[in-house]
Image 1 (cartoon, rainbow, N blue to C red):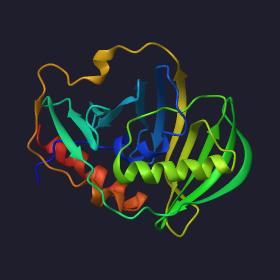
Image 2: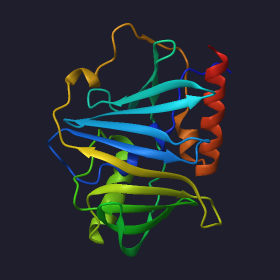
Image 3: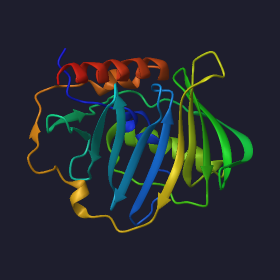
Image 4: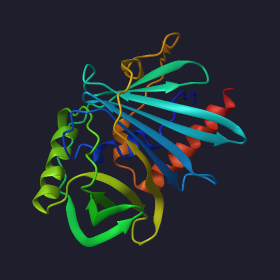
Length: 241
């Protein structure tokens, strides 16, 4: 199947970063492990409620970058860019799913790197993950709409009721039925600086791809299934070159 999109972190964790509103521009970097032999560096840019993510990937010695945009001007859509053939795909979120309850358990205060964090364990719809929030940093903001927005706001309300706010410093996705982390994301850089508006626009020379992707299927997958699908998509991408 011809596929021209690479996801990685782009759709795995966007719902975790709307914890609080912040008017300024933010740049952050996360290192993701568990997606291959080498860590994947994910860059995040937030400006005026728009969000850009970039993931640098090393596939067989060939370096690739996958970029996505979530824009206020395009609700319910994530734009995913293919830097190898200069195309972009519109991933539409048309979810009508019932909002699921989140089970949130506060584990306690822990130090992650230089940050004082609150460790929480979360689960929903058969999936679980651990997160470490710090109040020392403001959270990244991004556009929300539809059922996803309602579900995210519900989760945020539950977190705030337990005194949890701020920026995620670490995220660990847990294999169902175990305590083993299948994927881990760790904050490695955080800066509040002015970002160029061009970062949040479709680059010149890029054309729209005809490829369609069902984001709803991904939402029902476990973290392990998402990992397998993403690795398959990356291999298919390499075959096209």
